[in-house]
Image (cartoon, rainbow, N blue to C red):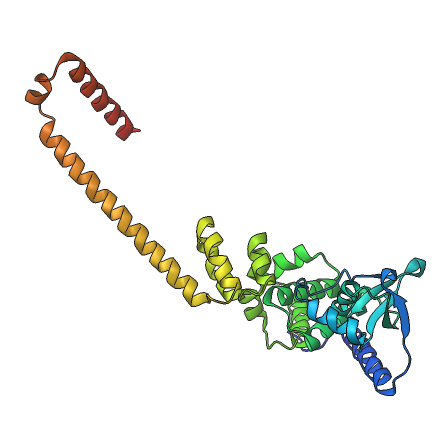
Length: 301
């Protein structure tokens, strides 16, 4: 596999780095930024972060002190703007009922916006495992110019193309998670196939390793255990231990049922003799014969 970075991705990374440097330089020089109305700004469709809980403290700080770091936006048609970086500040400003927010405006393509948004998120805030998995897939798909479902299927296959592996390799270096294709495929791609309620648990802060472990639990067990995983009380080890204990309990119950069944059969066999059958009245004898016939039919079926 070639170690050469694809030109389009290399250019996007360079532009993102330049934009980041420009914002920092503007902040250091205290250059005035534009103040945009909150209702003029749309959220980014490329946002890697899905969990925006816990904004109350940030909203209170903004209400008291204002937004100290400008958001980054790109202009859209019709005089509107789209967030590239700073969605937590934008959302918290809405909660704080601020009419405007300081913003740096930059012309950006979809690739530039997606690249910069991912970089900003990873530089400032830790994404959870699902958000990393999704962001890496989306950036790889964007660079390849293909649908995410198609790229996801290829990366999970036995023989992905050299081009897909090369682009994925560059994206994994960019997110600075020390990930390789194999570790991404083994630990992150499976998260994108989880059912909605398990994804929700990850977005609420549940360790992804514990969520992966709880996949094999029954729906009833998942309803009982997921709150413990989300709260941090249970790790993967506790989930595995609970699964083992549940399996042992189930096996014990099965063994007890088998023992009870054998005891009942032994008792019936001892009692169900021709002499005993003939001693019954006609109604009971007919019922016993009918039950015996039904049992034989059941076992044959």
